[in-house]
Every structure is written in structure tokens, then in C-alpha cells.
Amino acid sequence: MATTLSYLKKRLYEIIWCSDLLTTRVSLAIGSLLWGILLLWPGVLFTPARTTYRLMAEVANENVWGVIFVIHALVSFWQLITRHLKSTCAIANNLVGCVLWTSSTLACFLSHYVSLESFQPPAALGADLAFVFASWWILTKSIIARYHNGR
Image (cartoon, rainbow, N blue to C red; front, top):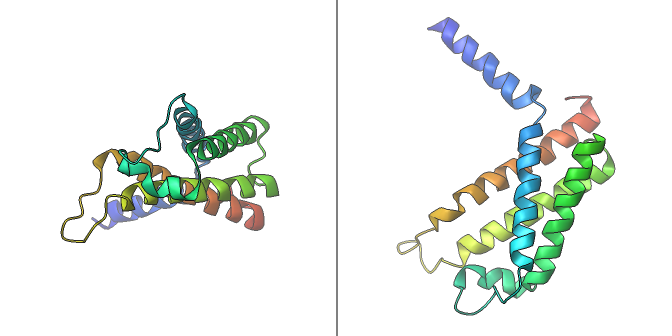
């Protein structure tokens, strides 16, 4: 039992601190690109009838959100291709990703909130929540790597 726990502890440490997050970075960049494209799609997405985007619409229109998501995706792909994962630009882009994913996902979740008793979060946003956590982890790891010579 102690050997199993020791092994699990070692593996979790390796997964959390020693992985390069390449697949996570690619997934996040693709997610941002798709969000951007779908927000820029011809037609009006942010309408009063679509309450999911109500709070996002209060911040900016769908084209502004779309352009920012596309820019984040393109810079993320550039980071991956050039291997600039620890630069100031990379950390700034990772911060933008955190803000984008966190604010858009929370806005979509909170647009369904009336009261705690009646709150039913949209299940379709589960993957977006995973991207929120991924974007924060990428930011955290890039800062650690930059200032502590980590991986």
C-alpha cells in the first residue's frame, strides 16, 4: 500500500510539475480559434433571446470578443511554433487567455443564475470550465518556468 501511494505521489508530481503541457496548449489554441470563428460567424449571436451570452454582450459585442479570441489563438500558435513559451509576450498572452476563458465562461454560467436554489448550470459549458483551469495552469507554469528555470 505504501509503495502504491509513493508511486502515485511521484506520478502526480511528474504530471503536474514536469510535463510540458504541449497538448494542453494546442487544445487551448484550437478552442480559442473556434470560439473566435464562431463569434465572428455572419449573423447576430448576442440577441436578447439567447440569454447565455447576455453578460458577454454587456461587456462588448460579439465581434470584439471574436477578434480577441482569434488573436489569442494566433499568438498561442506562434508561441508553440517558435517555442517562445517563457517570454514576456508568452506570459502576457497566457494572461489574456486566462481573462478570456474565465470571463466568457463565468459570464455564460452566471447568465443562468437567478437564485442558488433554482440555479442549473449549463452542462455544455463543462469543457469551457476545463479550458478555464487549463489556461490558469498554463499561466502558472509559464511564470514558474520563467522565474525558477522550471520546465
